[in-house]
Amino acid sequence: MKPRWERHGGTTRPYPKAHEISTRLTPFDAVQYVHRMPVPWARLAELIRLRSQWGTLLLLLPTWWALVVASQGRPSLRLLAVFTAGAFVMRSAGVILNDLADQSFDRQVERTRQRPLAAGTLDVRQAAVACVLLLAFAAGILLMLPPFARWLGSVAFLLAAAYPFAKRVFALPQAVLGAAFGWGVIMAWAAVQERLPASAWLLYGATVCWAIGYDTVYAIQDRKDDARIGVQSAAVLFGDRAWAAVAVVYGVMLSLIAVVAREAGMGVWTALLLGGVAVVQAAEVDRIRRGISGADAFRAFQRQAWVGAAILIALWLGVRVQ
Image (cartoon, rainbow, N blue to C red; front, side, top):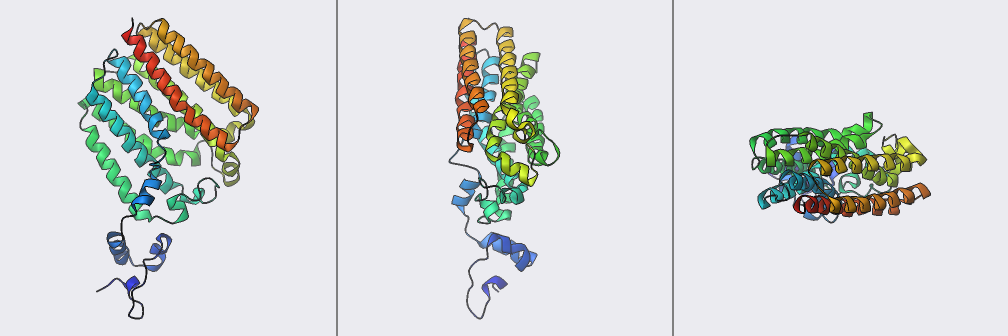
């Protein structure tokens, strides 16, 4: 017997739109609907931002910093591959969790209203299933790590789940994002040394500060819409003084990385490259101070991936050329 949405005067009706499921179908019909409909691969790719992997790079690069420093510049290819796969999978799952939580907000923001869940072009149940599968895959990747790092991985899942709701109750949700993005540093260091010295926590703190900075810049795109609908962010909290907040966290980030470099015995090459990064970051802050558009804010956010790559080179040279 056909589900009732296919029974209409003896003819077959088209599948209903995603937002019609809860209002027109029984739970049994809805399960059949999700099972029978074609998998919308293009929409799922759009949902996980497959064409834009800047977020994955910003999540991945600090884990590589930790792998390089903890291994004295000789990270294993296996761990590099594991953390690269983990960054892609966790970032993909994270954006699905974010979009599932923020559908109602996204519909009210110009930049996000065409996202698949906000626009109703992707079924919520299919997005949820994709998220569960990604998290299951991430758990499988976690099993490839040593026991201590594996145990720390459970914290990563909790932090990823907490961020989408932080903006509802916390004036600085970027700090929660930073805690989540930086946790890969802790896991990577533990995967190499199976212990967490002070340098690991300093590098974690640097990553948290970095994420607060670049995500504040990212949030400038939506500052007016966020203030109107009541979504909290650092861009809303600091307003026209956001540039000063970004300057502070970028400065703390570089200071902490410099301490880690000194403790690891790194020399002049690291100092020169980190000095160059400081100049770049100062120029970015000055652009924000003078006022930037939403498009400029997104480009400034993207450029931080190059900053992360430069820091990686500085740390690698520092431990290799001593």
